[in-house]
Length: 271
Ligand SMILES: [Fe+2]
Picture 1 (cartoon, protein in one colour):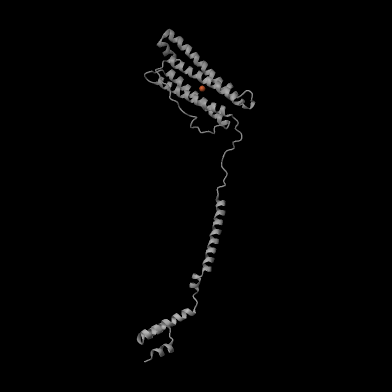
Picture 2 (spheres, protein in one colour; picture 1 turned 90 degrees about the horizontal axis):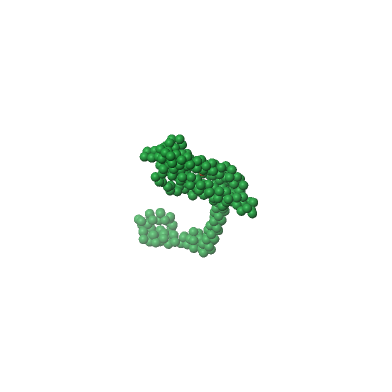
């Protein structure tokens, strides 16, 4: 049997060995000694981690390092953001060449609208004379043809604007259909309404020509090419159609004055 003091001084075992030994010999005293020795050893060994954590200088250095790192990362991100900006040039078409004046363009668009409306009006007349209760196939065919011609007149003006590079605005307000007028037409009243419509269109073309001639004091305002087209081709066709319509009205009036309803029937057969 060892004495307590002799055991602890002589053996100096490791903590594990000491615990085994003490568990059978003198547990209370030896554990106390072991704890005291361990505490003494810990005091002799400097605790680097604890010192670092508690040192204010280290904290400041860590803060400065983190701040610098964040600053560098932010600068890199900003530089990358500049590089990532979309610098693709817009795909806009070259617009340096169209030279039509705005009042002329506006009048052209209005004229297109009038031609389209005339086409719709003639289409309504054609439908009316196609009705089985009216049954005037000659008149119906005439107005179907007139509707097609007016639509083609509108298309020609659209193509002209496109050729001059001025069909750049939205077409939403270019092709608008106004309500058509429908009555219980006779052949004569239908031709008279058609003639009235044609004279309105003719006047509108003349106004368009005046607008596109511009101010006589400014030669640059005169759109010579368009004015030549409207005067030489467009108005020529309009006046020719107007003359044919006037002739039909005269013939029908003569036939009806002598034959009444039969005159309209015969006229319809020969249209
Ligand atoms: Fe026309």
